[in-house]
Image (cartoon, rainbow, N blue to C red):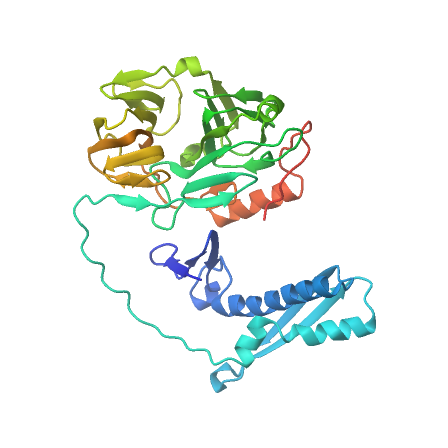
Length: 422
């Protein structure tokens, strides 16, 4: 397991902890020199003990088929003698469910066998601290390679952004390559139940198949290859994305790109909006050895009809086998994603993304290459991404989660299935 910690803002004690796809803010109380916007290190330490006990009991009860319905943990800390090497934690367990006294005692004994408790009391913990090695000077203008994270959300996707090496490219904060996939007729396999967004815009672009979009503005829109669905979440919107019945029955392949773009801070809480742009509005332009369709922005003298409040670029390029093409650098940040085929120059395999900062000459492989070019105006920090939400503060993210889970967020009435915020 790799944990990364960075200072949240210069001059503040507040720290940002990155654990896989999860972010936690740690801080000290104002009396201790912090801003009180997160738990302190001792709180995190204690919480790991309490959490481990609760999870251990739930897993044990499930394995032994004990009628444990929930575990509540109350932890009290006495650190008054910490400097003498004594750190006291008093943990009180509330076990809910029709348990007998014998079963409760059995669970109490298991609680002290949780991995974190044993780590604290039985293991020899060795901690080594060193300075990070000075990085080797990078080659000037060396492109940054992003490998996809393959995930299954009912079907396989390749996630490019956010990544460990690059959080976003211009306003693009989330880039998924969906499929290719087929779905069983008469099922809901692959359907994305309704879920919420704030502070961002979603853009769907399909290569094959079709999807059906519903949202809380009343939009009901089928999207097919070459068309654009652009949904601006602003202060809050919920939507579902489902596979149409005819696509399932005919076993048509569904494949495409789903991207999220950060809204500028001044429009982060604007009224939500949805726009559908038919495929006829995105004509194919031919340049030597390549066909080009401009989805956002302007490229090769072709300008998209799609309006977005930040300067950005999103283009599909299909190169003929072995074709050569110079891609002019026109944005503050820019990347190419190889959706299919291969590149001989630079060497790139399908599913990889390359972040560049200068004109780039590409040469397609023997089977050609399908590229997505994206980039745009850099968005200043702080920009926080948590689950389906983008915001400028942790407080706004937590409010959005609570509003969704507790029913204060707009909900679809004709598509009632919904995904709970974690």
